[in-house]
Length: 174
Image 1 (cartoon, helix red, strand yellow):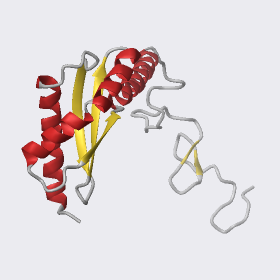
Image 2 (tube, helix red, strand yellow):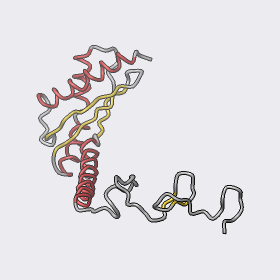
Image 3 (cartoon, rainbow, N blue to C red):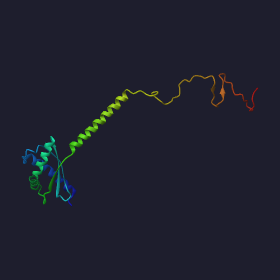
Image 4 (cartoon, rainbow, N blue to C red):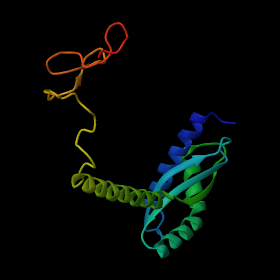
């Protein structure tokens, strides 16, 4: 098992070599707008997976996949020549799903933005169901009631006299 740092360095080098070789040496007309996005190498450095994207129609993607398969030998020999490793890794080309994932994420973000705009529009025209501030606050100036209660709970008239019929002895006044 090779060092993971060495595998990453080899994968980066393979990505650069494949991209340069496709641009300079491969003259297949089926290779159109190809971008090599990533390369990964197994831990034993025997297999390399190269991820690519193609700009164009579905026909262009199919043609590019066929062109990459036919150019594997040239690409592998170029990798072996430029890297100098004892065993040149076998190549596997995989179409990268980044563009499709990006489109799906963009669709989800646009749906979320539309929902947010709808909520903001409803909030701008919304009115309170009750008062703007639903919490009770003490009134600044309470009106005087005729029969207001004193602090001790007994009824007091406006003139301050006690309206209870019981006197201090507990009996009733006549």
